[in-house]
Amino acid sequence: MIYTQLTQEERYQISALLKAEHDQTEIAMILGRNKSTISREIRRNTGLRGYRPKQAQYLADERRQSKVRTHINEGTWLAVEQLINLDWSPEQISLWLKTFCNISISHEWIYQFILQDKAHGGDLYHHLRCKSKRYGSYNRRGQLIDRVCIEKRPAIVDLRSRIGDWELDTIIGKNHKQAIVSLTERKTRFTLIQKVEYKTSQCVSNAIITLLPPFFNRVHTMTSDNGKEFADHKNIAAKLKAKCYFAHPYASWERGLNENTNRLIRQYFPKDSDFTTVCQEEINHAMDKLNNRPRKCLGMKTPNQVFLGINPPVALAS
Image (cartoon, rainbow, N blue to C red):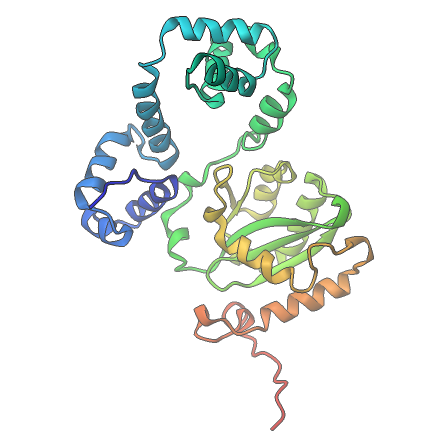
């Protein structure tokens, strides 16, 4: 069998399975991996706070890159620094060195080199023409104030064994005008949606605080992505007496239910829909359709039946 390195997604699966108290043999069987691979992964990448997938991926990347970096001598890094000072972009430097010097060094390594220089008080980052994009939105998204990472979310949420764990998201209208806030309960697939005039943290927060209070006793946790529209998470958590957690950046599989629900919502409001022409009555109609649709994962019951105990309207002729 040809060995392939564990992916980041597999590391998140390992973390979830460990939280669910699966042993290494069971994890290996579920992932289709050799038991020794799982054992080595946990042994090498477990820190003081246990096995954390983001940290595990970072440690694995560092080991892999350090092996290659040993082939890049100090003179090459000095040349890289000189080119940065000429306001060359990391991509330009990488391509130029490959073309004219036969030196392979990725632009990502050069970015890391700049980050390390900045961490030690250097000013190389001032030569990046896209500072706002690279170091603004990239770091700002995923660095919300007082955000709590999904790694700290109770393991019971992954099991879908209780009602009350929600996933939050937003759907943007045509030309980025207006948005739909979608909330989906993980166990029952019960969905709540509401239109907002603007995709701001205040508008999104108000929508969530409006939608969930009728089900106050069935709100334990809420998980979202790192969009700045969820910056008011502390207020949301306080009002609903629940915990807010954030998925890792660019890890959409951690909110797979959100992604699937959004596709279902798009059946009623396709991608080019102008939300400025959509009224809340239309939103409510779509929400009722979704919650009265039988689901295979629910034994062909509807979300309304499982979450509320309400039988769906029968539309079939006898």
